[in-house]
Length: 437
Ligand code: SAJ
Image 1 (cartoon, protein in one colour):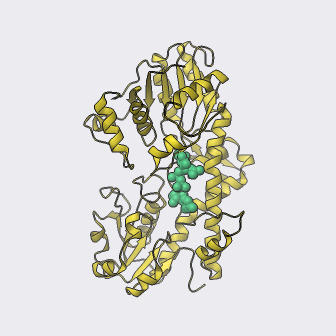
Image 2: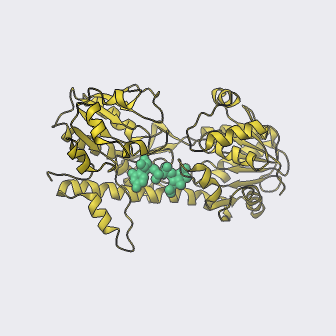
Image 3: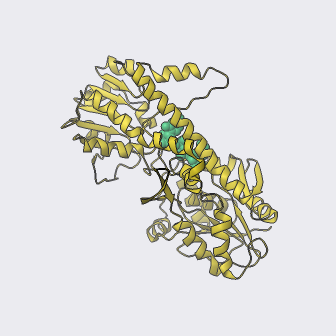
């Protein structure tokens, strides 16, 4: 299929890099977002997302005229839907007495509906948003058919999940293998023609529902593996073992690869996607649901450690909470365990000064943020590392000792060298390491 012009629906963490990359490869791209502020920001030549290399490629795409942004789609050869699929905050499903989260498909529905008036015979529509199994067939196809055109016959429809790692999106978009699931083989082939414009990794074609399952399986696999690492950390804490040492030794086995424990699993993917399986088949997903519960409760495990470091109570303690992003070196605060822990610390009576170097201006209802590292450290009784940002890994304990009266540091990510911090006069605590155990 020959594709000269595309519309990308949704200009977030996936849509904007995808739109700009297609524009950089010579396509005429219309980037569409319902959020007027995002459109205004981009029209002013600014970028609303922090991602290495993104600003450069977006600026170049806008300047070349190959990328235009708009609140509405227009006629094109192909449409890509890359909008969020979060879950509902306040409504839950229930199976056998256990609660599970429900996918909020309103953005996918709205973006698909917006395409209907401009959909033409021969067009290709690709859904990229992570979605429950059968979404392409059961939700997207019927909406698009309101145009009077038939899916698979008059227009082509495919599902191709994004699988890029935040922090490395631009490289992974191009280099990662890509799966394209077509409603029909012709749809899959058209999807392959589209992504082959820039994808250097292998492109595998299959049917739409398989591609949907692949995406959720990948993130569920990772979630379950992080859950077991977190459970091992709790066991190590109980038995007086250093989990990091134990994992390093276990991983010497050729068939063992235990992931890192931490303060919890956040972000918009791994902490969300497994619920799509649970919602779709609660009777078949005992392990997946349990892993979610372990990871969702991990911030409380981190809180207990911080409480212990604070001498049993956090009431009135000034805590410098370093990092709020859901993981290292990103600015994304969605579903962040660090944000949850900062809130829990405040609820426990601590006077929290949280600092996120990649989003120092962020404000929260439950706790106070500091605009700089210095402001967070000043007056602190306790320093807590919540995110393993590069800038925290290289903190010099001697310098920090001069910036804060605190002499106790809690590392929930195992990024600090305890000996160096102890030499600078700090008492050190690390998640998964219980000195008194
Ligand atoms: N985490 C741990 N321990 C680990 C690894 C991660 O606690 O050993 C935590 C992180 O701190 C973070 C969360 O898990 O809070 C998720 O981080 P991540 O780096 O594992 O993954 P994401 O959410 O940034 O990106 C994932 C990736 N999926 C897989 O690796 C299978 C990415 O390739 C997907 O494109 C992305 O989800 C997505 O969009 O679905």
